[in-house]
Length: 330
Image (cartoon, rainbow, N blue to C red; front, side, top):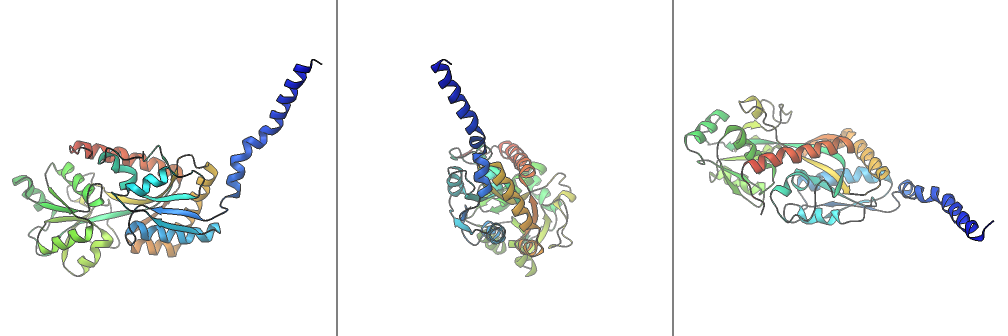
């Protein structure tokens, strides 16, 4: 046999013999995962709904995976700093994050230099749950219905103010949707957090707040604020008798923020699939469901494919509403 041909044949046979191992390498790594602690980044400060949700899920996930799942808070600029960090992390399954409607749906429409793409730079792992808001006014307010609020705004555009926790917050998005559906104009007053907005609402400095149900509930129970309607499409067990805004003349009104888990793009599918299954199992437990509902989070547990479709629909929906309102990214 020609020596050159023999050497070429031997090289080809060697490559063929090794190829199953090369092809199996990613799977082998996934099979051995997790072999060390997992970092669960929360791009918001400790103490909020995102942080509390992550800690509940991390506790159960640690037990199911047999490895610590360690919460690391990286707050800043509407969740951008922590989200950038995860987008640039190694896609090895050892860095995940708690993402929200703010970080993974609407931030691109408020910030020009975001530093990440919420769809291309991540893989959606599991939708933990959704969070509804409730439109509230001060208990001393003259407004007792959606019709009265809309009539006042039609008579004098921009005459009413609503408080928010800033661009991309659920309060801001709820107010934007309200204006879009009713064809009215509200004045937005931004605060550093929802608590400050509620304080000014009770004090009469602003007129309306679309606050999360969990945050508004103590004020409602204490008769300090009055509920006009919820942003979900159905009545909530936590607020019996409070009708959805969609059933009060605002057809199509639905605003629910959400809590989910994301991993950097390129994370091996077997790892993503296992994470999605394990989180779904955690969310399905009665104890976790009770704890989440206490935070105002309605449990979902949607796994990767369903969550991916949901996230993309949210980007499309809110992009149209925000851009239609003439919001220019800063």
